[in-house]
Length: 114
Length: 112
Image 1 (tube, each protein chain N blue to C red):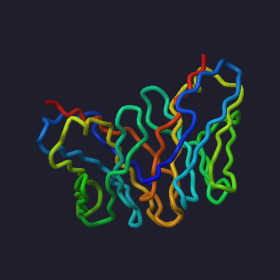
Image 2: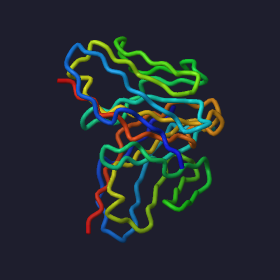
Image 3: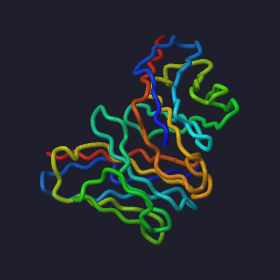
């Protein structure tokens, strides 16, 4: 069965650089969620999209932005990277009908800022 | 969304049942109890969910107290591969639901 695809799996950037993380949801899933998990921390919700519109926003820094495209894939753009942005970034997708039961997480992107 | 309280860690012998408790005393009538687990740095994995009745699937059983203020996730025959952080999450399960809020989960260590 198709899963949530995230790319790249690993990314190393220097401070003040920019990074773009991509998420390809499960086919027919129209909602995408982004989470950040720092070392030893629990996943923290960043932002979500439904039908290409932002549906909810969590503790996402102003330096970060995201969008969902017409094919439902989503990209998380991170600028002016800081050392503290080093974390695992997970994307999850779900069908609108079915709520959290339908959440499927990707394998994540590990971002290291040096 | 209601908050949950879980013990930070638990041990279990391989082959035995693992019983993971969760308190959610402020749960509302339309909120479901969900369990996810995260195996070392992998994406969280859905296990089971329920509203009022006990539930069972191929992975686990979920026992919810009658007052719905607490629940227990049961892994009937724990294996070493069940070693993970287990998250109990309370949220609305309707089509208007949104983000999952991860609190401090329980780190389950299954020992040989």
